[in-house]
Structures are given as C-alpha cells and as structure tokens.
Length: 382
Ligand SMILES: CCCCCCCCCCCC[C@H](C)C(=O)SCCNC(=O)CCNC(=O)[C@H](O)C(C)(C)COP(=O)(O)OP(=O)(O)OC[C@H]1O[C@@H](n2cnc3c(N)ncnc32)[C@H](O)[C@@H]1OP(=O)(O)O
Image (cartoon, rainbow, N blue to C red):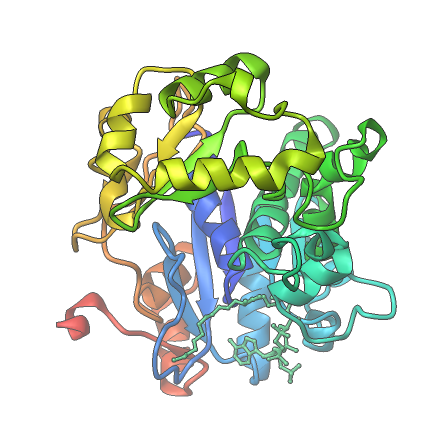
C-alpha cells in the first residue's frame, strides 16, 4: 500500500483527527492511537486498522513514554487545543529537535494563532467563521450545517491527511520534517474555493438559497415522489435539461426559459407536481440510461445493493457485519486495503506496541504496575 512503512502516533480525539488517522491506516500506514487510561468507553468510530495504547499523560513517566513513541515515528497527529502539547513538554520544537524528520500535524478548529486559537468549538462554529455557513440553506430559512461533513471531515481530517502526505513527499527531497497547522476554518474555506472564485461569473449574486447550486434553481434540487421518496435533479447544461423535460413529458415551448431566474418558482411548481405523480421506482426506470442527470436519493440501507455501487464494490463489510464506504480514491497498483477486523479496544495493543518501540519486558511491567499504561488484551473482550 502507498503508505506502508509510515509510522503514525495519533493522539485520540473526537472526529476529524480520528478520520485523518483512519485515512492513513487505510492506505497502509501503521497508526497507533494513544488513548487515555481508565476510559469507560471508546467513542472513536473511525478506528479502522489502528492499534491502541493507553497511556496516562498526567504522569511524568507517561509523558516521557509518549515522547519516546513520537520521536521514533514519522508522524504525530494531535487534536488538542493550542498549547496542550507544549504544556506536556511535547511541543513540536522539543520533538523536532530529537527527530528532525518528524511530521508534526496539529488539527484544530482555528489554527495555532489568532484571537480564536484558544477557543473551544465544533464543526458548526468553524463553518460559520469560514463564511461558508452563511451560504448554506434554503431561501427564507436560517443557515444550515450539512451534518459535520464540511469542517470536521472535508476541511479538517481530509485536508490534514493531505498536509501529512505532502510533508512526507517533501521529506523525501529535503530529509526534513515540518509542522502541519491544519485549521478547520481554513480547510473548510479552501474546500469552498469554488464559491469564492465563481463570484465573478455571477453564480452567487442572489441571497442564500436563490442561486443555481444552492437549491434556488428548479433544475438542481430534490423532488418528492408519489411514494414519499426523493429524486435528485442536476440538469444544468441545456442538453441535459432537455432530457429532463423529455423524461417529465413536458414541452419546452410551453415552459419559461430554463435560466429565467424570475420564473424559477413557477418552474419548480410544475416539476414538483410532475415528480409527485409517480413512484421512485417509476422515475428511476424513466431516467435510467439517459443524460438527464436524475437519480434516486438512496438511503444508507440501499446504497450497497445499487447495481453501480455493487459492481465497483464501493461499500465494504467488516467481520462484524458493519458496512462502510471503501477508501477512496482507488489507486491502480497500490490500492488501500482497509482492515476488516473489529476496531481496537482501548489499550488492546499496549504491550505489543511498547515492545515494538524497544521497551524491555521489565520496563513494560513497571509501567503497567504503576498505572502509567493500561493493557486490555483481546481475550478480555469476550
Ligand atoms: C450519548 C452521547 C455521547 C456523546 C458522544 C460524542 C460522540 C462524538 C460526536 C462527535 C462530534 C464531533 C463534533 C461536531 C466536532 O466538531 S469535533 C471537533 C472538535 N474540535 C477540535 O477537535 C478542535 C481541536 N480541539 C479542541 O479545540 C479541544 O480539544 C476541544 C475539542 C474543544 C476539547 O477541549 P477540552 O476538552 O478542553 O480538551 P483540550 O483543551 O484539548 O485538552 C485536552 C486535555 O486532555 C489531556 N489528555 C489528553 N490525552 C490524555 C491522556 N492520554 N491521559 C491523560 N490526559 C490526557 C490533555 O493533557 C489536556 O489536559 P489539560 O491541558 O486540559 O490539563
């Protein structure tokens, strides 16, 4: 796999950093998640392919152990509020001094400087400060955050993974590591570059929810079917729009022009009535094989059995039967090979990892006995 041989220490976080670590693990990196000790439960749902060590960082021995793991690795991924790692004596200056090849990735909401750097926050706050939230939502409704996908995952976990991979690539030339300052505000804003840079072609001249791609246009929206399901319509270009009208059995001569903004409410009303006259299965059959850009809105339960997804194997099942998306994109020679085993329990690999990082059996026993680390072998899971 592309990242085989890359050693990553991921400090356990909430959602974006675990996703970043999972991407690295899916593509072959050895990812070790550092958990807290005495955890009642593990809420990391993005743990595929990782191993877990449990270390108490409120002890000097725990901190020096983590330091040992970090400086022997290629990447450290930390999701804490600015200053937390420095307080522990594990800031980038300290670690890079000991391992100048280290890539030190810091995934935060607001980045490492600026007046908000110390503030708590979540996806919706980062999205708000990026400007993007102001553009999301239907006309006359308040701004709407599309799950926590944009800041946490696209602008956060995924961008941070890109930063790490870029730093790894650069290291092959310079031999040097570097700090990756991944701010979810900036990551989200960057993902929104199209919105910024297409202002000048007039794509966003109208208020929220009244533009072509923000549910303003009747030819780029969802419509309810007679059985209460939904079809997605994305017929932007005139040749595809013609196909849409054909499928709906509408005569363009009797309709307003596609791009007549003032007529969009009227057109939407006509499309709404049409879509409400047939079931999802009927519309799917009508539009299948056409270029109308009309597709059924599938539920999570339906996606893996859709013939297209099925043929490409776009969704995978792990050994416990849990279904999830296959890692993307697909690399031709060195594709990701996602682990199908159950997610690691907190501390499941403590002993194995410490041995791998060169600790002797007596040292490990001492750390276990003093509660600096915890080990929960797989058999205790049963
Ligand atoms: C039934 C409901 C259950 C609920 C389950 C929840 C399910 C998950 C839901 C996911 C929701 C995702 C949401 C929408 C998100 O947006 S997640 C994104 C959150 N933001 C970030 O990640 C940005 C960067 N991080 C931060 O800003 C902050 O970490 C935070 C998220 C605001 C949390 O702040 P806070 O809890 O005060 O923690 P921090 O200041 O980071 O300090 C962490 C402290 O923990 C300590 N720590 C760490 N590891 C260990 C360890 N192994 N052992 C002992 N201690 C440990 C650190 O030393 C630090 O301690 P201290 O410096 O505070 O004394």
